[in-house]
Length: 328
Ligand SMILES: [Mg+2]
Image: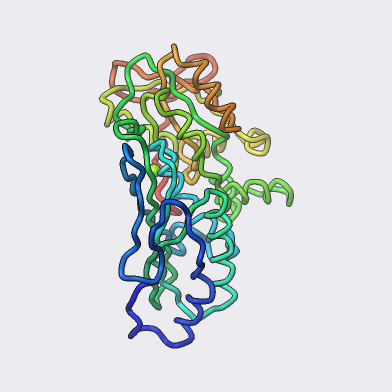
């Protein structure tokens, strides 16, 4: 990894070399870690897709998380952004601030990070490390055929609104950590996994190219992220709250808590996308090919604004704040 050796002790340098240097190469990497820059090869006719996300202890993750799960999540949230654009992941860089030369922590972080990298066939190609408050910043790079990236701006009135997977479990886990909800051990482990081990919908995103009219990944809560799509596309939406897919654990909670977790939860890392009704079979085929469930939860409207309706079609008047990491 890159320079700044003057700020490192010999132990830190050794720790990084030991845990974060690998000799593997993917086809897209002509030159990885070890020089001033990495050299990546983007296939002819493809655009480079770049996304960066920072995870800060206490704000984006709790100190209770195991290091390998943190490594998994740090890369997964970046791959989720690539998925939202329909991109194929190529490589990533890592900028890491570590408060201490903790060998156990670094080993666990690297294990989780590289397991997720291997799952998606990508390699760490550079970055930087320094001593400081725990902070993990990953930049993920991918490729997409020119002009085919899924964007927030393509939604049209009359399009169906879809989500992948189930929503709300990560927020429910956060409420358990906050002490506002009590779950039994098995239920807690399930929702905790949703919070700590999100699965970026990379295959689904690519399968939706040419099918979906817009897409975004859900990191800050359904309503907040949907609001970004509505603004970019100059449309409105109506969401049927009863249609939003949820786990059995969340479904067993009080309705108000369910609504908060589903609509303003955060940390879902599922895809929210729109598609014309004529594309329903194509959406189903894309989801089946990717091995991910998708559910229709509403529709886009020419009238601006965002309505949430219950099972009887009545508009819910309550407002939900968008998820603001650990501060909502
Ligand atoms: Mg995103």
